[in-house]
Amino acid sequence: MSQGFSIELYFDPALENQVLKAWNVLARRQISTQLIEIESRPHITLFSSPFLDPAKLESVIKSFASKQEPLPISFSSIGAFPNENNVLFLSPAPTMTLLQFQAQVCEAIKKEGIEIGEEFKADAWIPYCPVAQEVPKTRMAEAFCVLRELKLPVSGYAMDIGLVEFSPVREHFSFGLGNTIDT
Image (cartoon, rainbow, N blue to C red):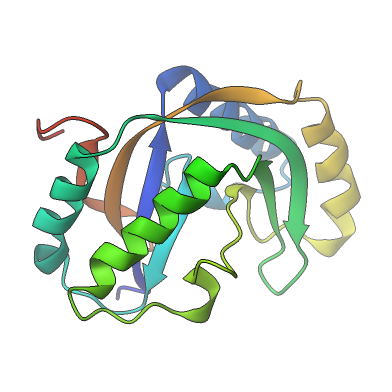
């Protein structure tokens, strides 16, 4: 049973590998394996909704992606959402380019009649790249220590945008930024 859909921003291979390194270290220490288990891919979520029709968005996202360029991304800090999911994340420097990109994605899908939830509106969206989910409260401090061993900032580019269904994660489509070629 699907829990929802999200539009995700994916990274160049070098930056993706830096994030995967964090996932793997946390998994080896048995702090969190959730993202690996659900077959996720390192990403920044641009939009998420419990219900939508992927076919309705494919041409919209393809057209949007073709007009964009790869985005510079620099993960400069570590953060957490201390809620029932206990998510640890890498936080990108919130550049105007990244913030405008996300706002434009939401504007494009809003034109298709899809409602944008409060947390994805331009003045509320928090960009982040999850590195651990469902971290036990008793292991949060240890997880932060492990992540501090990453040599931040880690920088690269967002290269692709895709739509996934979760959980487990299943990609419906993805498109390279500035490309009209299907990936």
